[in-house]
Image (cartoon, rainbow, N blue to C red; front, top):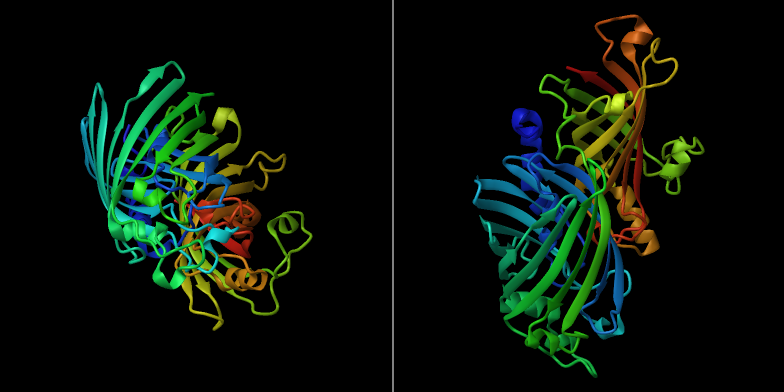
Length: 472
């Protein structure tokens, strides 16, 4: 079956824009030493897959006295005929045949100093930031395995270097089980290694001499697996170890040469098995919204329990946006429950407090309409979950973070709870039967500071909005 977005050019163009904008809009926070998550996310990359998931990860920090780190990794996944989104990577498939695949992509490099607890070994050093890379990837699939070659280069002039990766994977399947051993060789140039693991002369201190590791070779081995718990739920797990080049491990700020990591998680696939996939004649939803920011401390739980429904009186900001959605699953298991995929573009009006900016949201939304009175006035309750990428960190997030000494991130988790009623039922108009008026909350958050992919942000923003949505 053809992929969903390939048959709906509006959403396809929107997702393509998100792919191209990711390089310029995303500013994220450090995580792994080798920055490669593809062996894990590729377990879910079947044609037509659209998924959401969460993986917990425990790994050793490469930095001296950094200890081990616990992290939550949100999985935002889409695998179309030409476009794809894999957690920290998004791109376009230039070639997608049975044996050969060529991708042009942007990827968040998951490296850099910790932001939540800086070890003593790094005190007084300039923060090493995460970076956004652009690259090319070529895969050659054969019965004996898959070879993959990738070239990556700094897209934001952060470390000003490049990396070449050569990898091998082999897929073993048996019933619901899938195992994937992986070997990756990463040739890193001097600029890349010097930025993340070097010590500048101005940063030298007692026990921390100036040091420049130069170029080198890192080697990673891993074993990743998945188990089909049901038609759509998959359990994920993996173990990996990265052997740093000797010149990196000799750095005075690096604690060990071998860096192990363990992954455990789950993902829900909205489209990979496609039996219930909504047909091409399913409706397309268009939604216009306007909202205002809430006071600091008026968090989502208070809004949903009606403890706080007022908007900010001081330093108030507003949003105006449009969302376009298409059903992925309709009447799931015979219930009045649909899953709708949305792409949203929102403008932040900061009212002179800082420069205005755009926000791009990609999310999957569960919509329930089985209330006892819905045959008279159709009422829908929805909850959207996905990812939000901001051109600039919104004022209310930046000001709250600055007051608490916390980091910010342009990319955060996105929630979109809504409630609406049919305008046609209210007015007695059949023409407006599938036009809805309602209220919602545009919520960005960093999952309580537990996710390095989301900048270790503890906080976010809430905008209470009104909207009008119609199905065409």
